[in-house]
Length: 484
Image (cartoon, rainbow, N blue to C red; front, side, top):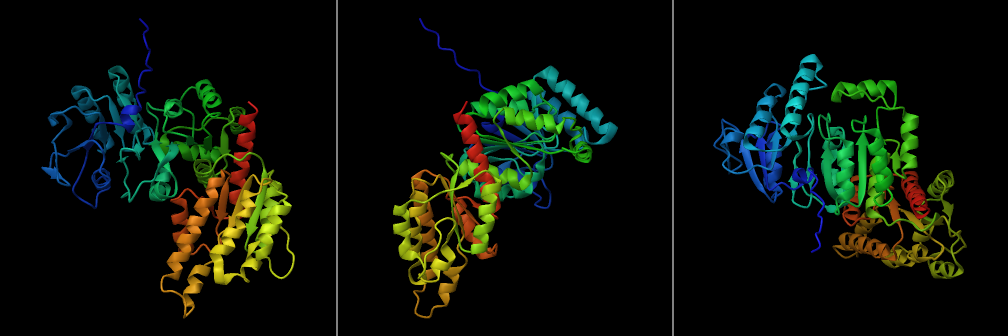
């Protein structure tokens, strides 16, 4: 008889896929921060049971409330504690009493809260270690799992777009951006490790590398709490299969002190050594916050390029020069378009010859305003070219809105043209090559179109340089992993 060994379930699975969640400190008062925690679970239709805990309420958002964890008549998989730091130890002891082994501590004021806070931190840390309770935080929000609509957040979440990108943070800096993240990127899971009393970056990486729904990982770290050798070993093993983007803050002495002020941990790692470690492991290091989200968006939504030959489609000659400079500075090469491509796009040229790369579509567009969609469809020849590995294109200015001023134009011309433009870009994705855009006007009309595009996994960057930097990182990663 053959015995099939099954891999034991990682303990973080219970944080992301609980069958029931108790919210301690839930409230009906919309003016309190804790209100949104319950509101999100209700409005997003979390696929599990919810037990609000508040001794002063009979019901919260229409759901029966309980005076304490001990009063809940059913098993609780995940407890979320949002009570003051001084009362948290009582919640931890209640978890032990009811057999709840997974706890999120939202409240701050522990290791970052002076001597008294550190004393509370140490007391809870000692207790949970002896009782086998796993703790996320303190000083944290999350987890988020788009698959089962679980979201622990202080912000009202409007919608979630599922995908393969999983985030791990050591800070709540992402929290004000959560609606932008969840609508502009295909997110799988999000975890904020907070002060890392128990759960740290090693636990998180190990779980996400084994998680079949996670395809790309973006992790923010202020200081390593887990074993450094284990962290490097995991990166070496996992980043070759799943692109892993690392943002390390607290790089300077002043930044390290600032990190200690809000998480209680001093970032003592030598930044040069840390950077070398990331590179050695084939992970991708983000240099700042913009870089972090640009890289996350690019790796989540685009296929890896087969090479570094890049085509640039611009609407301004000056932008084309800057994009060409950025390619040269970031290790990308301008693609040499074929004679066949030249013949295909020559029909949209102005009455004179122009270079093919960077291709100034702006000067050509002036002669084809009567049929913009045919104009864009002709441009398809550029990303299709066999000599092109990736393409970036400047967003068209608000021509669609300008055409609304034509007296004889159809009433819904604006919406129709925008929809056809979106569908054209979606069709370009079928060629299996990276195709990204960058912004032109940065006004509200363009941002609405950007949201529509990114909802369809067509990334838009704030400048050609940021698009090129993201594509360059993808090229380097693809080259490293191909040669391993």
